Length: 204
Image (cartoon, rainbow, N blue to C red; front, side, top):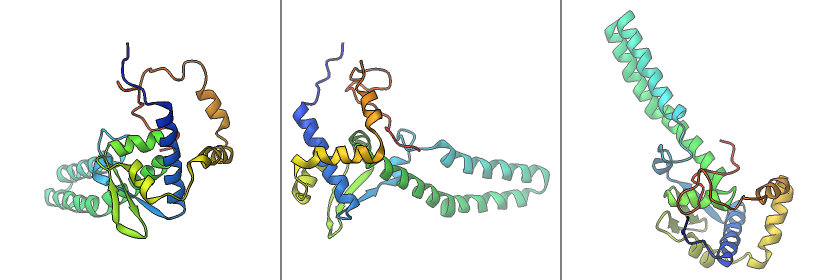
């Protein structure tokens, strides 16, 4: 039997309202969202891709060994050294850009993804007109940050804001399916708090 405390309904509604205000401010270029690459590019992160991180190094290693044993030892060693530099200065920045795009897409898609990435410590919020004012995850309180620095959007208008976005994305069918029997129960893929550790509704 799961005895984990559930978040009160009014708190969930407020979180959704604050999150909607945050996303609206991000798209209006009032706030910036920065990504901590080192925290999100780890095996425990849902954004981590083994193909991006392991495959290039494996190709360099295997290619170097083949050259060492079939052509020349010195040539193989040189290719390995050059391959490492290529990975550090070309492949790794390319991976960082891909992780950044996936993180922003996931974080601005829904509240579940935002909270998941925030708990991993992979996000930083800043005010675009005041760069020194920032909120760093996971210790920073993004709710307090939004409440204090982004007061433009009234909470009463958030439901209309969500409805407009759902119509624009054609998500109404998806929402109806999620409200079917048993959708609110804790099942496989959820942690002991009833939270799904996977990202939702994002094409990786």
